[in-house]
Structures are given as structure tokens and as C-alpha cells.
Image (tube, rainbow, N blue to C red; front, side, top):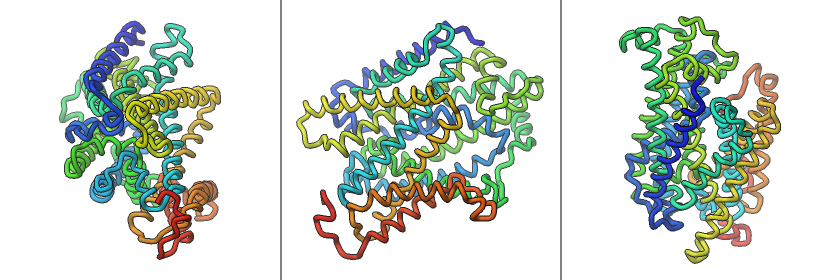
Length: 490
């Protein structure tokens, strides 16, 4: 086990770096800087930084270990992700830039009305708050074990200090700061994978060509699965990956806010193409690492942990070289904070723009409102993480996180109906459709094996969720414009 004082020094050094970047990027910052980075971000920087932001701490820990359960099947999902990124670049980015949006949910206001607008934003806020808290909760547990328990620091203090540090380095520069800190965090994340692969190859005395041969010869390196009932079926994984990217990236304020900091539509689209290919390569590296971890554990006689999520931290911290352990620690910290800091900024942006309508006020009041909202969501993140800890039941916590994922279905349905249909909806009934759709999907998913001859829903439940929302919106619509009374705010 690594010396706790060394771990503490590394984490403190990491945050000092973040603070330095924050100080530089937040000079002369105003609310427009916080929300849009004044649309001056270098697109290549955004592309590289988004790799780290897309790979949360959960992904960092889980993907290598999951290789033992489902081989390289996750790559099928990522192929779908890549196509989804290209569709976002081709369809959604031009729309957002044309309308000059700060919050992407403002589109729903222009297209349908204020009820639809606030419904879309509300579902994002709930999903992102629970999702960010869940990811931080899992990673905070790892940091608690490797560091804070050694100093008898309670988990509550760990969480409060963690969120407080995020607040400090993002409260002024906002998304401008995050574009730059994401780049640093991506460097740490990718370095962790490379250092671990190098350390394993040194321990097993493997050359680069030997590593390639060993990985290719393992059953864990199988990519394509065609059994239709399986959750790993290629078509289920591919189309789920594509649609999840479209909605949880292209229709997610957190991820799109970074893209909208680019100077123009063309640069934002270039950013998406380069990012998507970099993301594919990075995930492939994680999967290769997973195979090597299992090879290492077998050949060194190390029993693999019962929970596959524990494999990477278990071997990196206890059985590999000190540089590999340091790289892992910095990588897990970076992956956790690269998703959490942007989530906090996106939550602040969406609530400030969509519900408070911050643009109505003068700059002095905008700054005050933004700080208050930013602080409030920081407090909410702390409360939700501590609630997960109090529940102390992993299956319940995972169920809550899964339920939050259901709320992206209505967002998908709203955007697709708005973009590809000219029909107008009865705006005031949209919240009812949006709330009923996830409930119906949950009931279908729970009974799918009985209803559909053994078929089990996986990520593709999002597609069904979107389709049910689309059907509900169509039933509420007609070809003629609704009266102004039916579309408040339009």
C-alpha cells in the first residue's frame, strides 16, 4: 500500500496545478466567460480535453475489469458512440450555433414553449445531479481507502472538501477554466493507462510485439457478439451507443457547453471529429489494459477480486511499480474531477439561464446570482453523495443512478420531434408525457423477459423511452400553429 503522506502530497500538488490554471484563465472573467468562455476556445484543446471529461471515474475503474466479464464487447458500444458524435456534429451543432444558444434547452422554448423548455431542462438537472453525485461517490470511496482513512478523516469531511475544491477553481472562470483543466486531466488519465501497461510489460518481460500477440490470443479480446438475446449483441450495443451519445452528449448541457465555447460551427465540428477518434483509441487502450491485468494476475498467482471494478486499483496500488501506482492515483483523481467540475458548471448554467433567466439582469446582479446558484448546486452534490453513503446498499445506489438515466429519454423525444417534425404540440401537456414515458419504460423493462420471450433490455431502453415520448408528443400535436395561450413564452 502506498505511503499516505506521498498520496496526500500528490493530490495536493494536483490541486495546486488546477488552482494555477484557474487563476490564469479566470482573469477578467465575467458571466459570459463562465457560461461560454466568450466563444474563444481553441477547438483542438477542447477536443483533447473532452476525452478525459467523457471517461468518468466509474469508466476509469470499470472498463478494464469488465473485460473479464464481457471481453471487448464494450467496443461495439463505442463504435456506436463514434457515429453518434458525427451525427451530433452534422445535425445538432449547426442548430445550436445558428440560434446562438447558451443553454441548449432554450431551443425547446423557441420550438414548443416554456413548459417544454423547462421540462427538458428539469430532466437534465435531475439526471446530471444524480449522475455526477454517483460517480463522485464511487471515486470518493476509493480515495477514502487509499488516503483519508489513514488520517482518520471522516467520509463526510472528504466529500465536503472535495466539492469545495471544485467550487474554488471553477466559481469564477467556469467553462473557460474547465476547457483548460480538462486538458491537464486527460493527460493524467491517458498517462495512467500507459504507465500501467508499461509496468506490466516490464514485470512479465514482454516486448511491444509480445504484448500485441498476447492480447490478441486471449478470449477476452473478442469484440463482436451476435446472439440476439444477449445484452452484448452487436446491434443492441451499437445502436444503444449511438443513441446514448446523441442524447447524453448532443442533448446534454454539460457536454455541449464545451463545444459551444469554440469560435464557430466549423471549428466545433472539427473538434467533434477529432475528439470521437481520440475517444475510440483511448477506450481501446483501456480494454487492452484490462486483458493485461488479467494476464498479470494469472501469471503472478494473484487471485482476481470478486468485484471486477476492484481489479485495476487492486493491482495498480499493491502489485505494480511505484510510478504505476502514482499514475493510477492521479488518473482516478483526474477522471473523477474532469466530469464533476463540468457537471457543476453545467448545472449552474442550465438553472441560471433556463429558470432564473439571468440574461434579464445587469452584470453585477448576474455575478451574484451565478455565485449563489453555483454554491447551491455544490451543496446539493454533497447532500446526494452523503445520502448514497447513508443508504449503504450498492444495489440501491446503482438503481437510483439507473433511474436517473431514464430521464434522458424524454429529452431525446423532445429534440427529435422538434427537429424532424413541423407539427406543434399542446405545450402545457408536455410535462405529463415526459413524466409518463420513463415510468412506462421501467415497467416494460422489468417484465421484458416474460413479454418478449427472454429478451432483456440494456442501454437500448433509451431508444424505447424516446419513441414513447415521440408518440405522446404526436398525440398532443397538430399541423397548425397553436394559439399563443397554448405556448407560453413563444
